[in-house]
Amino acid sequence: MDTLKRSYIDRNSLPEFFPTNSHTPLFWEQLGRTIATFGFLEEMLGKAIFAFTGMRKYDSQEIEGAYKAWLPKLEKALSDPLCNLADSFGKAVRDYHGSSTENVSELLESIKNAAIIRNVLCHGSWPVPDNDGKSLPLFVSRKQEVFETKIDIAFLCQVHDHVRDLACDVIDTVLQMGWQFPGGVGPGKTIWLRHR
Image (cartoon, rainbow, N blue to C red; front, side, top):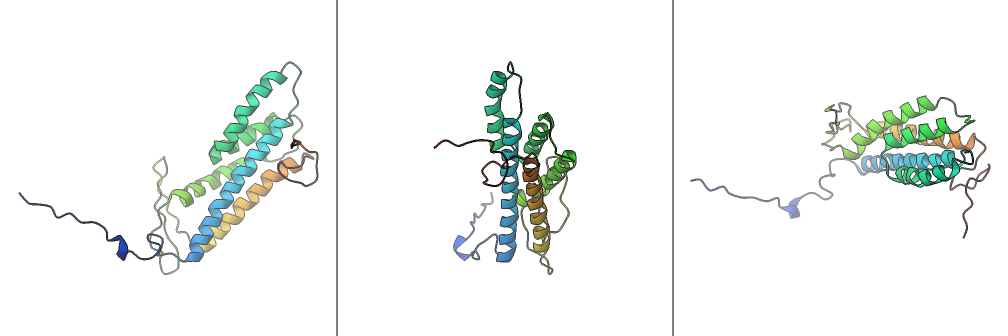
């Protein structure tokens, strides 16, 4: 009977920053900044949900039930993934009587499309880039769809700018109502007074 020779990776001989040593520091910086911008978008969606649900008017007999349902809504806004946050945001805007927000469906669609790229950026494995600095991340969606677009720094910058604009669009939905954005100090009617 043959005996298998066992082996192990010599960790002391790995290149510095392995397994991320094949890309430039600028690539990793831009990837990190782009992913962080998605986190900012998620935070803005949560605050917009807070604004629209907190400013909604209720009949006197609805107030107690609405108040009890509000905390679980806000808790979900802190933990939901991006697509679910977009759905909750859309519902909050549509349920608010007198919303001046136009094209909310298009905004939601754009956010959900961006979520696909977010998942690739966050969960993909990054092989060695080609001579042009482009890398095809290994990523397969839950629907077994294989991502097939090579990504470089310019691509990441474009995604970053698009997601930043989506976050600004979400903030604008609140500001256009004449409300101060939660956590901000700008113009508009204050939604929540923090007692110290």
